Image 1: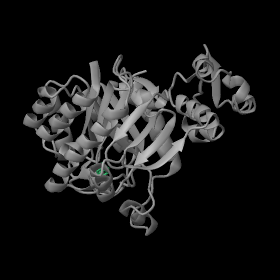
Image 2: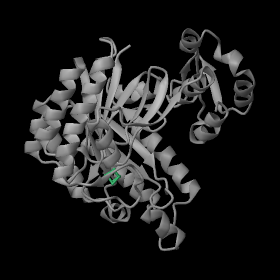
Image 3: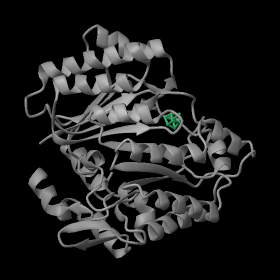
Length: 378
Ligand code: SF4
């Protein structure tokens, strides 16, 4: 089975007000050291991986803001990856890009380096809402980023959008969806805003400076998005993801199908050789370990069969086509319908899931209640 490779770039120009991801202010000297550390981490894996494990069918460079780094730094990173891993023909190579950090020249360099998919963090087409989120760009920069990507030759572009922002109306959301559709990206990812504890946005809501989006409105925004995007020829293939035919994210499918992936860089997560592990999030600890020749892993969990089966179920249920029940049997040697008989029967009775053509999937009623369904399998 081929490997999905993820490389985390933990630098951003400025922290967004809702963000609790691992990211640090961009400082060129840290970034240069970081590229050396990544090279070293790749070499460490190069020593232990089998030739099959080194075969990579998707490389995702995410963040943070990878496009904080100069394009030649990203190109060098891809070259380093190619010298340790075997990037298979047709390998999907995605770079996450933030409007305001990419220009035509840099995009052309990325394309020349083999990047064939760009994921642009647009989030909204309303400047007022982008300010609420603390994004560094406005709507015009987002449109320009997509156009620049096209001019640089990218034919596979994703844009990320956020709904449920304090102050966002149903009309705002519909306008954002409309402007996204006008740009005609091949893939659209939606995120329902989470007010993460300790973020400035969460504090502003707690202090009453902003009003959180009511749950019913957020739910109706989600439903609007499904109707709107499927009506504009996007296939709804995962709870939060929509794609033109043949443009589903190869890399993200690996997560949902429980396939092996290896994460490199500070704060990166992996699921590999039956273990889940996460790297050190602190840059200092990450550098210290890697330059000492150690794997920079902080937490490691060997997946028991029980946990692996549970993950297979709730990750697979994220896909609109659902969990492949025969694949479950091939993987674990038992039927999911037997292992989870009481949970499945209960959810079927409640109308939250349905069984069809060998797949178990969320029903229309279950889709917005997915987290409740997943809990049944944990
Ligand atoms: S660009 Fe992304 S990773 Fe960086 S601060 Fe904003 S949300 Fe967080």
